[in-house]
Length: 511
Image 1 (cartoon, one colour):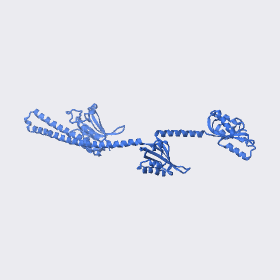
Image 2: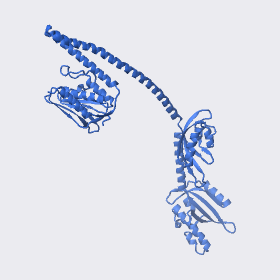
Image 3: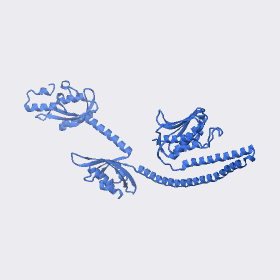
Image 4: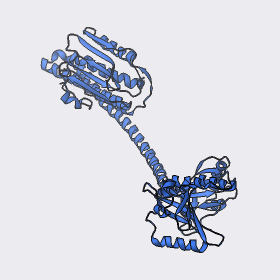
Protein backbone atom coordinates (compact mmCIF):
# COMPACT_ATOMS: atom_id res chain seq x y z
CA UNK A 1 0.00 0.00 0.00
CA UNK A 2 1.54 3.27 -1.17
CA UNK A 3 -0.99 5.91 -0.14
CA UNK A 4 -4.48 6.42 1.35
CA UNK A 5 -6.23 5.51 -1.92
CA UNK A 6 -4.93 1.89 -1.71
CA UNK A 7 -7.02 1.38 1.43
CA UNK A 8 -10.33 1.96 -0.38
CA UNK A 9 -10.86 -1.69 -1.46
CA UNK A 10 -13.19 -3.54 0.84
CA UNK A 11 -14.21 -0.43 2.83
CA UNK A 12 -17.77 0.52 3.60
CA UNK A 13 -19.21 3.74 2.10
CA UNK A 14 -18.79 5.52 5.45
CA UNK A 15 -15.17 4.41 5.61
CA UNK A 16 -14.58 5.54 2.03
CA UNK A 17 -16.01 9.00 2.88
CA UNK A 18 -13.71 9.21 5.89
CA UNK A 19 -10.79 8.23 3.68
CA UNK A 20 -11.75 10.92 1.16
CA UNK A 21 -11.78 13.53 3.93
CA UNK A 22 -8.40 12.22 5.14
CA UNK A 23 -6.84 12.65 1.73
CA UNK A 24 -8.24 16.18 1.19
CA UNK A 25 -7.37 17.77 4.52
CA UNK A 26 -5.16 20.87 4.17
CA UNK A 27 -3.16 19.60 7.16
CA UNK A 28 -0.58 16.92 6.67
CA UNK A 29 -1.63 13.48 7.97
CA UNK A 30 0.62 10.47 8.47
CA UNK A 31 -0.70 7.00 9.48
CA UNK A 32 1.76 4.49 10.98
CA UNK A 33 1.65 1.05 12.53
CA UNK A 34 2.49 0.43 16.19
CA UNK A 35 6.19 0.17 15.34
CA UNK A 36 6.19 3.58 13.67
CA UNK A 37 6.40 2.48 10.03
CA UNK A 38 4.42 4.76 7.73
CA UNK A 39 1.37 3.08 6.22
CA UNK A 40 -0.21 6.07 4.46
CA UNK A 41 0.05 9.83 4.02
CA UNK A 42 -2.32 12.35 2.52
CA UNK A 43 -1.86 15.05 -0.12
CA UNK A 44 -1.31 17.64 2.63
CA UNK A 45 1.72 15.70 3.81
CA UNK A 46 3.21 15.77 0.31
CA UNK A 47 2.49 19.49 -0.15
CA UNK A 48 4.15 20.43 3.17
CA UNK A 49 7.13 18.03 3.24
CA UNK A 50 7.76 17.56 -0.49
CA UNK A 51 7.78 13.74 -0.14
CA UNK A 52 5.44 11.63 -2.28
CA UNK A 53 3.69 8.70 -0.61
CA UNK A 54 5.87 6.21 -2.48
CA UNK A 55 8.98 7.80 -0.96
CA UNK A 56 7.89 7.44 2.66
CA UNK A 57 5.55 4.43 2.99
CA UNK A 58 7.33 1.74 4.94
CA UNK A 59 9.81 4.23 6.44
CA UNK A 60 9.84 5.86 9.88
CA UNK A 61 8.73 9.54 10.28
CA UNK A 62 12.17 10.26 11.71
CA UNK A 63 13.23 10.90 8.10
CA UNK A 64 11.69 14.37 8.73
CA UNK A 65 13.79 15.08 11.79
CA UNK A 66 15.80 18.31 11.59
CA UNK A 67 18.26 17.68 14.40
CA UNK A 68 17.10 20.83 16.14
CA UNK A 69 15.33 18.96 18.93
CA UNK A 70 17.49 17.02 21.36
CA UNK A 71 16.94 13.39 22.32
CA UNK A 72 15.17 14.34 25.54
CA UNK A 73 12.46 16.08 23.50
CA UNK A 74 11.48 12.85 21.77
CA UNK A 75 11.74 10.80 24.98
CA UNK A 76 9.24 13.14 26.62
CA UNK A 77 6.97 12.86 23.57
CA UNK A 78 6.87 9.06 23.75
CA UNK A 79 6.32 9.08 27.51
CA UNK A 80 3.24 11.28 26.99
CA UNK A 81 1.96 9.04 24.21
CA UNK A 82 2.40 5.94 26.38
CA UNK A 83 0.66 7.53 29.36
CA UNK A 84 -2.21 9.42 27.70
CA UNK A 85 -2.23 8.25 24.11
CA UNK A 86 -1.86 11.87 22.93
CA UNK A 87 0.87 14.47 22.36
CA UNK A 88 0.65 17.98 20.96
CA UNK A 89 3.38 20.54 20.47
CA UNK A 90 5.51 22.57 18.11
CA UNK A 91 8.44 20.91 16.39
CA UNK A 92 10.97 21.84 13.71
CA UNK A 93 11.21 19.32 10.85
CA UNK A 94 13.04 19.19 7.53
CA UNK A 95 11.45 19.16 4.09
CA UNK A 96 12.73 16.99 1.28
CA UNK A 97 14.52 20.07 -0.09
CA UNK A 98 16.51 20.33 3.14
CA UNK A 99 14.67 23.46 4.28
CA UNK A 100 13.75 23.57 7.97
CA UNK A 101 10.18 24.51 8.84
CA UNK A 102 8.16 24.75 12.06
CA UNK A 103 4.98 22.74 12.45
CA UNK A 104 2.25 22.19 15.02
CA UNK A 105 2.01 18.40 15.45
CA UNK A 106 -0.70 16.30 17.13
CA UNK A 107 -0.12 12.55 17.57
CA UNK A 108 -2.85 10.17 18.70
CA UNK A 109 -2.47 6.47 19.52
CA UNK A 110 -5.07 4.02 18.10
CA UNK A 111 -5.85 1.03 20.35
CA UNK A 112 -7.41 -2.30 19.46
CA UNK A 113 -10.20 -4.16 21.29
CA UNK A 114 -7.69 -5.52 23.77
CA UNK A 115 -6.39 -1.99 24.57
CA UNK A 116 -3.07 -2.51 22.85
CA UNK A 117 -1.75 0.24 20.55
CA UNK A 118 -2.16 -0.76 16.91
CA UNK A 119 -1.44 2.47 15.05
CA UNK A 120 -0.47 6.17 15.36
CA UNK A 121 -2.04 9.08 13.52
CA UNK A 122 -0.07 12.30 13.21
CA UNK A 123 -1.71 15.54 12.04
CA UNK A 124 0.47 18.62 11.48
CA UNK A 125 0.19 22.19 10.22
CA UNK A 126 2.97 24.20 8.60
CA UNK A 127 3.62 27.22 10.85
CA UNK A 128 6.14 28.91 8.53
CA UNK A 129 3.79 31.56 7.22
CA UNK A 130 2.20 32.25 10.60
CA UNK A 131 5.55 32.52 12.34
CA UNK A 132 6.89 34.78 9.55
CA UNK A 133 3.87 37.02 10.02
CA UNK A 134 4.35 37.00 13.79
CA UNK A 135 8.04 37.82 13.32
CA UNK A 136 7.19 40.65 10.93
CA UNK A 137 4.60 41.93 13.42
CA UNK A 138 7.15 41.79 16.25
CA UNK A 139 9.73 43.63 14.17
CA UNK A 140 7.17 46.22 13.11
CA UNK A 141 6.07 46.64 16.73
CA UNK A 142 9.68 47.01 17.85
CA UNK A 143 10.37 49.60 15.14
CA UNK A 144 7.19 51.45 16.06
CA UNK A 145 8.09 51.36 19.76
CA UNK A 146 11.55 52.68 18.92
CA UNK A 147 10.11 55.49 16.79
CA UNK A 148 7.54 56.42 19.43
CA UNK A 149 10.16 56.33 22.15
CA UNK A 150 12.63 58.40 20.10
CA UNK A 151 9.93 60.97 19.39
CA UNK A 152 8.58 60.92 22.94
CA UNK A 153 5.17 59.88 21.58
CA UNK A 154 2.59 58.07 23.69
CA UNK A 155 -0.45 56.13 22.46
CA UNK A 156 -3.98 56.01 23.86
CA UNK A 157 -7.40 54.48 23.18
CA UNK A 158 -10.63 56.19 24.15
CA UNK A 159 -14.19 54.86 24.02
CA UNK A 160 -16.49 57.91 23.73
CA UNK A 161 -19.52 55.81 24.66
CA UNK A 162 -18.20 54.64 28.02
CA UNK A 163 -15.62 57.37 28.53
CA UNK A 164 -12.95 54.74 29.20
CA UNK A 165 -9.40 55.90 28.46
CA UNK A 166 -6.37 53.64 28.13
CA UNK A 167 -2.88 55.15 27.99
CA UNK A 168 0.42 53.42 27.40
CA UNK A 169 3.31 54.14 29.77
CA UNK A 170 4.58 57.11 27.75
CA UNK A 171 1.15 58.73 27.41
CA UNK A 172 0.58 58.17 31.12
CA UNK A 173 3.82 60.00 31.94
CA UNK A 174 2.84 62.91 29.70
CA UNK A 175 -0.51 63.56 31.38
CA UNK A 176 0.73 62.63 34.87
CA UNK A 177 4.04 62.47 36.67
CA UNK A 178 6.08 59.24 36.40
CA UNK A 179 4.85 56.74 38.96
CA UNK A 180 1.50 58.47 39.48
CA UNK A 181 -1.84 57.08 38.38
CA UNK A 182 -2.68 58.08 34.78
CA UNK A 183 -6.28 59.16 34.01
CA UNK A 184 -8.55 56.19 33.27
CA UNK A 185 -11.41 58.19 31.77
CA UNK A 186 -11.94 61.22 29.59
CA UNK A 187 -13.43 63.08 32.55
CA UNK A 188 -10.31 62.34 34.57
CA UNK A 189 -8.21 63.77 31.74
CA UNK A 190 -10.36 66.91 31.60
CA UNK A 191 -9.83 67.35 35.35
CA UNK A 192 -6.11 67.73 34.64
CA UNK A 193 -6.77 70.67 32.31
CA UNK A 194 -7.11 74.30 33.41
CA UNK A 195 -10.83 75.27 33.59
CA UNK A 196 -10.50 77.69 30.66
CA UNK A 197 -9.13 74.87 28.42
CA UNK A 198 -11.86 72.29 29.08
CA UNK A 199 -14.67 73.54 26.77
CA UNK A 200 -12.27 73.93 23.84
CA UNK A 201 -10.70 70.49 24.33
CA UNK A 202 -14.11 68.81 24.78
CA UNK A 203 -15.25 70.31 21.47
CA UNK A 204 -11.97 69.36 19.77
CA UNK A 205 -12.37 65.71 20.86
CA UNK A 206 -16.11 65.04 20.95
CA UNK A 207 -17.32 66.67 17.75
CA UNK A 208 -14.85 64.92 15.37
CA UNK A 209 -15.37 61.63 17.23
CA UNK A 210 -19.15 61.81 16.64
CA UNK A 211 -18.55 62.62 12.96
CA UNK A 212 -15.96 59.83 12.61
CA UNK A 213 -13.28 62.32 11.55
CA UNK A 214 -9.58 62.39 12.29
CA UNK A 215 -8.61 65.32 14.49
CA UNK A 216 -5.74 67.17 16.14
CA UNK A 217 -5.85 69.12 19.40
CA UNK A 218 -3.29 71.11 21.36
CA UNK A 219 -3.89 71.64 25.06
CA UNK A 220 -2.31 72.29 28.43
CA UNK A 221 -2.42 69.91 31.40
CA UNK A 222 -1.78 70.63 35.07
CA UNK A 223 0.42 67.98 36.68
CA UNK A 224 -0.16 66.72 40.23
CA UNK A 225 2.79 68.83 41.43
CA UNK A 226 1.19 71.95 39.93
CA UNK A 227 3.49 72.10 36.90
CA UNK A 228 2.22 72.81 33.39
CA UNK A 229 2.76 70.76 30.27
CA UNK A 230 1.67 71.53 26.72
CA UNK A 231 0.65 68.53 24.64
CA UNK A 232 -0.56 67.77 21.12
CA UNK A 233 -2.93 64.87 20.49
CA UNK A 234 -3.76 63.41 17.08
CA UNK A 235 -6.41 60.71 16.68
CA UNK A 236 -8.60 58.72 14.31
CA UNK A 237 -11.99 57.20 15.26
CA UNK A 238 -12.90 53.63 14.30
CA UNK A 239 -16.07 51.59 14.82
CA UNK A 240 -15.49 47.85 15.22
CA UNK A 241 -17.91 45.84 13.07
CA UNK A 242 -17.52 42.85 15.39
CA UNK A 243 -18.60 44.34 18.72
CA UNK A 244 -20.09 47.60 17.41
CA UNK A 245 -18.00 49.67 19.86
CA UNK A 246 -16.57 52.95 18.54
CA UNK A 247 -13.07 53.68 19.71
CA UNK A 248 -10.68 56.54 19.11
CA UNK A 249 -7.04 55.59 18.55
CA UNK A 250 -4.59 58.39 19.17
CA UNK A 251 -1.07 59.54 19.91
CA UNK A 252 0.14 62.36 22.14
CA UNK A 253 3.48 64.16 22.42
CA UNK A 254 5.03 66.94 24.46
CA UNK A 255 5.44 70.40 22.86
CA UNK A 256 6.19 72.29 26.08
CA UNK A 257 9.69 73.25 24.96
CA UNK A 258 8.39 74.53 21.63
CA UNK A 259 5.59 76.43 23.38
CA UNK A 260 8.07 78.07 25.80
CA UNK A 261 10.36 79.03 22.91
CA UNK A 262 7.45 80.53 21.00
CA UNK A 263 6.32 82.46 24.07
CA UNK A 264 9.86 83.70 24.59
CA UNK A 265 10.02 84.78 20.94
CA UNK A 266 6.64 86.54 21.24
CA UNK A 267 7.82 88.39 24.34
CA UNK A 268 11.11 89.24 22.65
CA UNK A 269 9.26 90.46 19.54
CA UNK A 270 7.01 92.63 21.71
CA UNK A 271 10.08 94.07 23.44
CA UNK A 272 11.84 94.62 20.12
CA UNK A 273 8.75 96.20 18.62
CA UNK A 274 8.61 98.61 21.55
CA UNK A 275 12.28 99.41 21.12
CA UNK A 276 11.86 99.87 17.37
CA UNK A 277 8.96 102.25 17.92
CA UNK A 278 11.00 104.15 20.49
CA UNK A 279 14.06 104.33 18.23
CA UNK A 280 11.88 105.24 15.22
CA UNK A 281 10.40 108.14 17.15
CA UNK A 282 13.90 109.23 18.16
CA UNK A 283 15.12 108.91 14.57
CA UNK A 284 12.15 110.86 13.20
CA UNK A 285 12.81 113.61 15.74
CA UNK A 286 16.52 113.61 14.81
CA UNK A 287 15.69 113.74 11.09
CA UNK A 288 13.27 116.59 11.62
CA UNK A 289 15.93 118.44 13.60
CA UNK A 290 18.54 117.68 10.92
CA UNK A 291 16.23 118.86 8.16
CA UNK A 292 15.54 122.06 10.06
CA UNK A 293 19.28 122.48 10.63
CA UNK A 294 20.05 121.83 6.94
CA UNK A 295 17.61 124.46 5.74
CA UNK A 296 18.80 126.90 8.38
CA UNK A 297 22.45 126.41 7.44
CA UNK A 298 21.59 126.57 3.74
CA UNK A 299 19.70 129.82 4.24
CA UNK A 300 22.46 131.32 6.40
CA UNK A 301 25.14 130.27 3.90
CA UNK A 302 23.31 131.26 0.74
CA UNK A 303 22.45 134.77 1.94
CA UNK A 304 26.09 135.95 2.20
CA UNK A 305 26.96 134.06 -1.00
CA UNK A 306 24.30 135.99 -2.89
CA UNK A 307 25.62 139.18 -1.35
CA UNK A 308 29.11 138.32 -2.58
CA UNK A 309 27.82 137.59 -6.05
CA UNK A 310 25.62 140.68 -6.10
CA UNK A 311 28.24 143.12 -4.89
CA UNK A 312 30.82 141.58 -7.21
CA UNK A 313 28.53 142.27 -10.16
CA UNK A 314 27.88 145.83 -8.91
CA UNK A 315 31.61 146.48 -8.67
CA UNK A 316 32.14 145.17 -12.17
CA UNK A 317 29.19 147.11 -13.62
CA UNK A 318 29.71 150.41 -11.76
CA UNK A 319 33.42 150.50 -11.09
CA UNK A 320 34.82 148.20 -13.73
CA UNK A 321 36.41 151.07 -15.67
CA UNK A 322 38.42 152.15 -12.63
CA UNK A 323 39.91 148.67 -12.16
CA UNK A 324 42.66 147.13 -14.18
CA UNK A 325 42.27 143.76 -15.92
CA UNK A 326 43.64 141.86 -12.92
CA UNK A 327 41.13 143.44 -10.53
CA UNK A 328 38.21 142.73 -12.84
CA UNK A 329 39.42 139.10 -13.14
CA UNK A 330 39.47 138.73 -9.38
CA UNK A 331 35.91 140.02 -9.13
CA UNK A 332 34.72 137.65 -11.87
CA UNK A 333 36.33 134.69 -10.09
CA UNK A 334 34.68 135.73 -6.79
CA UNK A 335 31.30 135.91 -8.53
CA UNK A 336 31.77 132.53 -10.28
CA UNK A 337 32.95 130.84 -7.08
CA UNK A 338 29.98 132.16 -5.11
CA UNK A 339 27.56 130.92 -7.77
CA UNK A 340 29.32 127.51 -7.85
CA UNK A 341 29.08 127.22 -4.06
CA UNK A 342 25.40 128.22 -4.23
CA UNK A 343 24.74 125.40 -6.74
CA UNK A 344 26.62 122.96 -4.51
CA UNK A 345 24.46 123.89 -1.50
CA UNK A 346 21.34 123.49 -3.64
CA UNK A 347 22.46 120.04 -4.80
CA UNK A 348 23.26 118.99 -1.23
CA UNK A 349 19.75 119.99 -0.18
CA UNK A 350 18.32 117.96 -3.05
CA UNK A 351 20.43 114.94 -2.01
CA UNK A 352 19.18 115.32 1.55
CA UNK A 353 15.56 115.53 0.38
CA UNK A 354 15.93 112.28 -1.59
CA UNK A 355 16.73 110.38 1.61
CA UNK A 356 14.21 112.16 3.84
CA UNK A 357 11.18 112.88 1.66
CA UNK A 358 8.09 110.70 1.79
CA UNK A 359 7.90 108.52 -1.30
CA UNK A 360 4.85 108.16 -3.50
CA UNK A 361 4.38 105.02 -5.60
CA UNK A 362 2.28 105.53 -8.72
CA UNK A 363 2.60 104.43 -12.38
CA UNK A 364 5.13 106.64 -14.19
CA UNK A 365 5.61 107.01 -17.97
CA UNK A 366 9.42 106.99 -18.12
CA UNK A 367 9.51 107.30 -21.92
CA UNK A 368 7.40 110.46 -21.86
CA UNK A 369 9.40 111.87 -18.95
CA UNK A 370 12.72 111.20 -20.78
CA UNK A 371 11.44 112.98 -23.91
CA UNK A 372 10.55 116.06 -21.84
CA UNK A 373 14.04 116.12 -20.31
CA UNK A 374 15.66 115.73 -23.77
CA UNK A 375 13.61 118.61 -25.22
CA UNK A 376 14.63 120.87 -22.30
CA UNK A 377 18.33 120.04 -22.85
CA UNK A 378 18.08 120.76 -26.60
CA UNK A 379 16.20 124.00 -25.97
CA UNK A 380 18.97 125.18 -23.65
CA UNK A 381 21.62 124.57 -26.34
CA UNK A 382 19.82 124.64 -29.69
CA UNK A 383 23.06 124.85 -31.67
CA UNK A 384 24.36 121.43 -30.64
CA UNK A 385 24.28 118.50 -33.05
CA UNK A 386 22.76 115.76 -30.89
CA UNK A 387 20.39 112.84 -31.44
CA UNK A 388 18.17 111.36 -28.73
CA UNK A 389 16.78 107.82 -29.19
CA UNK A 390 14.09 107.07 -26.59
CA UNK A 391 12.35 103.70 -26.51
CA UNK A 392 8.56 103.94 -26.40
CA UNK A 393 6.28 102.46 -23.75
CA UNK A 394 8.74 102.27 -20.87
CA UNK A 395 6.88 102.48 -17.57
CA UNK A 396 7.59 101.97 -13.88
CA UNK A 397 5.91 102.34 -10.50
CA UNK A 398 7.58 104.87 -8.23
CA UNK A 399 7.85 108.43 -7.06
CA UNK A 400 7.45 110.73 -10.11
CA UNK A 401 9.47 113.58 -8.61
CA UNK A 402 12.44 111.37 -7.68
CA UNK A 403 12.33 109.46 -10.99
CA UNK A 404 12.27 112.73 -12.98
CA UNK A 405 15.33 113.94 -11.05
CA UNK A 406 17.01 110.61 -11.79
CA UNK A 407 16.44 110.99 -15.55
CA UNK A 408 17.52 114.63 -15.46
CA UNK A 409 20.80 113.60 -13.84
CA UNK A 410 21.52 110.65 -16.16
CA UNK A 411 20.42 112.32 -19.40
CA UNK A 412 22.06 115.60 -18.27
CA UNK A 413 25.36 113.76 -17.69
CA UNK A 414 25.10 112.08 -21.10
CA UNK A 415 24.41 115.49 -22.68
CA UNK A 416 27.35 117.07 -20.83
CA UNK A 417 29.97 114.39 -21.42
CA UNK A 418 29.12 114.04 -25.13
CA UNK A 419 29.50 117.78 -25.75
CA UNK A 420 32.93 117.33 -27.39
CA UNK A 421 31.53 115.01 -30.05
CA UNK A 422 30.71 116.42 -33.48
CA UNK A 423 27.50 114.34 -33.42
CA UNK A 424 26.28 113.32 -29.96
CA UNK A 425 24.16 110.17 -29.65
CA UNK A 426 22.15 109.61 -26.47
CA UNK A 427 19.84 106.63 -25.94
CA UNK A 428 17.31 105.65 -23.25
CA UNK A 429 15.83 102.14 -23.29
CA UNK A 430 15.33 98.76 -21.60
CA UNK A 431 17.91 96.01 -21.98
CA UNK A 432 16.93 92.39 -21.43
CA UNK A 433 19.70 90.00 -20.38
CA UNK A 434 20.13 86.41 -21.72
CA UNK A 435 20.32 84.99 -18.19
CA UNK A 436 17.02 86.68 -17.31
CA UNK A 437 15.97 90.04 -15.93
CA UNK A 438 16.12 93.50 -17.45
CA UNK A 439 17.39 97.00 -16.65
CA UNK A 440 16.73 100.53 -17.90
CA UNK A 441 19.76 102.26 -19.39
CA UNK A 442 21.06 105.64 -20.54
CA UNK A 443 23.86 105.35 -23.12
CA UNK A 444 26.01 108.03 -24.74
CA UNK A 445 28.99 108.22 -27.08
CA UNK A 446 30.82 110.80 -24.97
CA UNK A 447 34.17 110.86 -23.21
CA UNK A 448 33.43 107.82 -21.01
CA UNK A 449 35.76 106.93 -18.13
CA UNK A 450 38.23 104.33 -16.93
CA UNK A 451 36.38 101.35 -15.37
CA UNK A 452 39.17 101.10 -12.79
CA UNK A 453 37.65 104.25 -11.21
CA UNK A 454 34.01 103.09 -11.44
CA UNK A 455 33.86 102.57 -7.65
CA UNK A 456 33.94 106.35 -7.14
CA UNK A 457 31.00 107.10 -9.43
CA UNK A 458 28.12 107.09 -6.95
CA UNK A 459 29.86 108.65 -3.93
CA UNK A 460 29.13 112.34 -3.22
CA UNK A 461 31.73 114.87 -4.46
CA UNK A 462 33.66 112.22 -6.41
CA UNK A 463 34.47 113.37 -9.96
CA UNK A 464 36.34 111.48 -12.68
CA UNK A 465 36.96 114.60 -14.78
CA UNK A 466 38.61 117.90 -13.89
CA UNK A 467 36.38 120.92 -13.23
CA UNK A 468 37.90 122.82 -16.16
CA UNK A 469 36.91 119.93 -18.49
CA UNK A 470 33.28 119.51 -17.45
CA UNK A 471 31.41 121.61 -14.90
CA UNK A 472 29.65 119.91 -12.00
CA UNK A 473 29.49 119.39 -8.25
CA UNK A 474 29.86 115.60 -8.04
CA UNK A 475 26.45 115.14 -6.40
CA UNK A 476 24.27 114.09 -9.37
CA UNK A 477 25.20 110.40 -9.53
CA UNK A 478 25.04 110.12 -5.72
CA UNK A 479 21.44 111.36 -6.03
CA UNK A 480 20.76 108.73 -8.71
CA UNK A 481 22.12 105.95 -6.44
CA UNK A 482 19.97 107.05 -3.49
CA UNK A 483 16.83 107.31 -5.65
CA UNK A 484 17.33 103.79 -7.07
CA UNK A 485 18.08 102.39 -3.60
CA UNK A 486 14.90 103.90 -2.15
CA UNK A 487 12.93 102.18 -4.92
CA UNK A 488 14.58 98.84 -4.05
CA UNK A 489 16.70 98.61 -7.21
CA UNK A 490 20.40 98.83 -8.06
CA UNK A 491 22.53 100.96 -10.37
CA UNK A 492 25.83 100.33 -12.16
CA UNK A 493 27.81 101.60 -15.13
CA UNK A 494 29.90 100.30 -18.02
CA UNK A 495 32.25 102.52 -20.00
CA UNK A 496 35.46 102.86 -21.94
CA UNK A 497 37.55 106.00 -22.01
CA UNK A 498 36.87 108.05 -25.14
CA UNK A 499 34.00 105.88 -26.48
CA UNK A 500 31.11 106.64 -24.12
CA UNK A 501 29.32 105.24 -21.07
CA UNK A 502 26.15 103.29 -20.23
CA UNK A 503 24.38 103.64 -16.91
CA UNK A 504 21.99 100.81 -15.93
CA UNK A 505 19.36 100.92 -13.20
CA UNK A 506 16.61 98.53 -12.09
CA UNK A 507 13.22 99.27 -10.59
CA UNK A 508 11.55 96.18 -9.03
CA UNK A 509 8.08 97.59 -9.77
CA UNK A 510 8.76 97.92 -13.48
CA UNK A 511 5.29 98.28 -15.04
